[in-house]
Amino acid sequence: MTLSIMLTFIFSCTAFSFSPGAGAIATMSRSIEGGIVQAKYNIIGLQLALLVHLIVVSIGLGAFVASSEIAFDFIKYIGGSYLIYLGLMKIKNSGDIILPNAEIQSGKLKILVDGFIVNITNPKSIVFLVAFLPQFVDSSDSSYQYIKLGLFIILVDCIAMFSYASFAHVLLRHFSKSSHLKRLNLIFGAVFIILAVMLLMSGRH
Image (tube, rainbow, N blue to C red; front, top):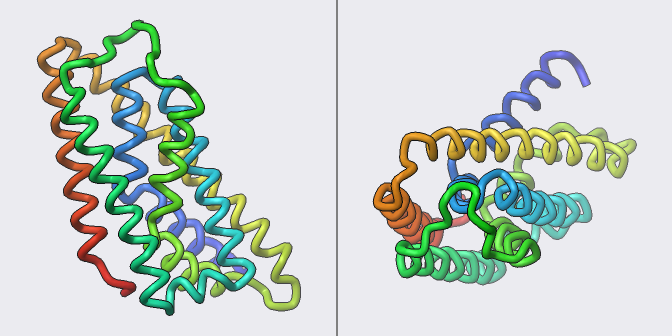
């Protein structure tokens, strides 16, 4: 891989990972609710789902999802429904804000699973990886290339998600009152629902 191609790959990965989406919103929400601890398990779930996406793309199934309207819509509707569910739960529980240094109420496994479902049910991620990743893979050694590039994408995405979590943690210092946190939870709930509508209205391209 030449320097120019490498820089293009790095820039594209960074843009993909730092683009605001359901994963970033979920991470910020978790960070505000329970600090970096909750956000960390959410990020692990997101990355496990991204790893599954990378495996799907590397073995050729990603192209099927990208080209099949039925498969794409099936994943899309599951993802949109789950985002609506998360949004409604945020709004419903907006009065039960976990204040800083309070005991974390959500189980670690549940947080991880929530993050996993948010990312695994995003067909746009698969479509992007199908269109993006093969351009940088040497066909003579594709398996190794997919592993190497995939691990780099996961690393960049981890950096992006921890950046969002840190931003939310800093934001929490300026919105420490319970009334402020309640409004933030309502906002996050509304954003989840908006993202769900956008996903449900989206197409493969």
